Length: 74
Image (cartoon, rainbow, N blue to C red; front, side):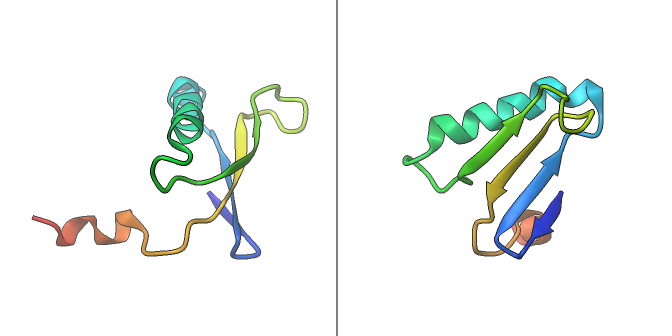
């Protein structure tokens, strides 16, 4: 994952074994859009024409990263 202008996230599927999960994440974002706070995906590309991996670009959601807070929950 890469932050772009602190407003967008570029996420690249680096492991081919994770392609199905990566696509599922994209589908979940689209399904839950407008229902819960999920990123707005601008680009999802699995064609490998631009780079040789699947990738997506989405708007960064403001707030704390769940990964950094996970250990504080009971």
